[in-house]
Image 1: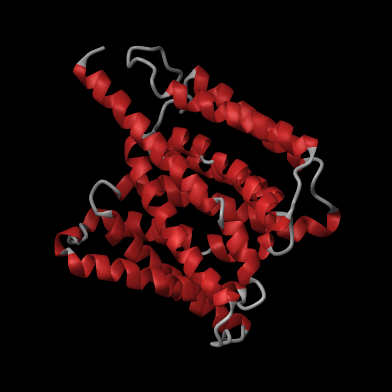
Image 2: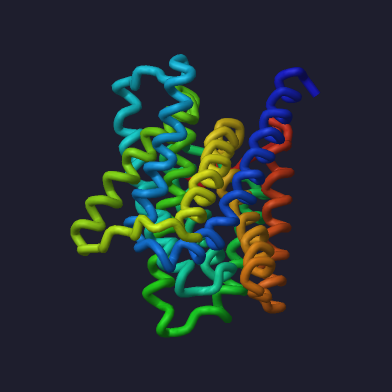
Length: 307
């Protein structure tokens, strides 16, 4: 193996590890959303949490001014697309987490996340599809469909559509970060992302007439802080991870969040996964392994262009 191939392999391993750490952090979002649900509305939890994030990243940027770079004109459109695609994800997912089982919610969201990331990688970044990626993608779809077909009832359809929308936007957000993350530090990008989140959530809350949250200390406020800190871990590691791996590979690794979410849901709320859920989860894990291994293929391997 040449030095360049070795460096590329190490970079892919590092990026994959970063993404897996982020999935563990994101796997806690359902738990935080349930705890917060009694104290905050969908919009208020979003802008309050983003204010906490804004303060965290603002302090980081003040302590190290070199982390902030002037935004290049060519990157403005990508930052806007990235910011807008990520602002509403936790608003929709918050609603779904409080109406459907945590594991089922993650499955819905990530069925759309994979599609969103895959399409962005294919259309915007002209990424190639090889046999391993196609097999991994098929296994992810099979795993999601296996669980999905036995979990959704007619009265759950509104939450299904919200989950699919949240997942699609998440896929766009993670993939679009690849376009600009190499030009700016993670604190700068996520500071900008928090500004988008606060603006959209405040505007949405005003439109629907959502009440302001109570400012009395309770478990909801503690969960908001926990949610924000977990978001710091998840967001930073996913942005770093997507610097080293293709958007398609990263999107195929993301379903590992489902496994962590099911474990956390069982530990905290006693939600026991069904046999069908375990089968689907097994297919998703297998797909993630195949996707990770495919990233280590030699650069000379034959690839199939689906573009």
